Length: 290
Image (cartoon, rainbow, N blue to C red; front, side):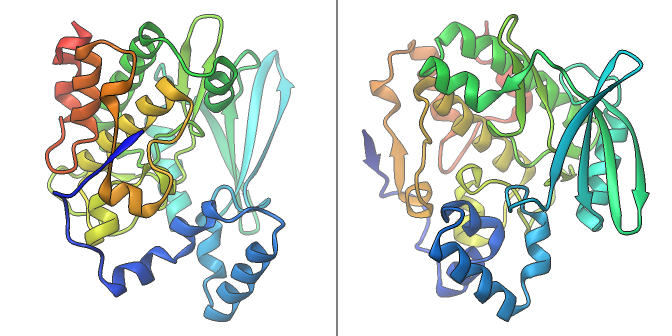
C-alpha cells in the first residue's frame, strides 16, 4: 500500500518529459526482445541517440563481463566502450583500490576503442537482487548490518570525491555466509561536489530522486540519500518503492505498515522525504544505528 503525495513539486513541464524519454531513464521500462523495444531502438537511431545507449549498462551486450582464474586469484574482466563517462569510472576505481567494501581494481588495458577493466571476482558472492528475492525480503537486523557497511563505504567515497550515483541492488554483491557486501559498477559515477547542482544522470530509473525528474537538477546528497531509501525499501519488501516516474513524484511508500521498529521507520522516512532528507554523514548518528 502507498499514499498519494499532494505536497511536493509541481508537475513536470513538457520539456522535462522530453528529457525523461532519453535512454538513461526509459530503457529499463521496456521488455527486451519485444516489439516496443525494437520500435524504441529504431526511433533512437532516427534521432541519433544510439551513442547515448552505450551508457546504459543493461542494454543488450554493450557491457559484458566474464571471469577467469590466474595465479590463484579470481579476476573479473569487464569490457566497456571508451567514452568520457568510462574514463571517470576508471579514475574512481583507481582511487578506491584496496578499500574494503568496494570492488577491487586490479588493472586495465585498451584495444582499439575498447577499455578493459580488470576487477577481482569473489566466487562466494551473489547479486544483491538474488539474495533479497530468494529470502523474500530481509530482517531488520540483516538490513542494519548491510546498511552500516554501505553507508561507511559511501562516506569513504564522499570523502575522496566520488559520487557513485547508481546505488541499487544491481550494483552490490553480497556473500550470504557473512553478509559482507561489495559496491561495484561505477559506470554512472561522477566527481562529488557538495555545492554542485548536477544536470545529468545515468543511473537506474527506479533510484532517480524526484528533484531530477521534476526540475532536471539534483545534488549529490539528494541522490545518494534517496537511493539508500529506495534500497532499504527493497530489502524490506523485495519490491521497488516506486514503479513509475509518476510514483516517484506523487506517491509516498506506506512505511507505517512495514513490520519494523519505529526507529527504522523514521530512518526510512528521512531517506525518502520528498523535501528535506537526512545527510549521508549524519546517518550513522540516527537512533536506529545506536
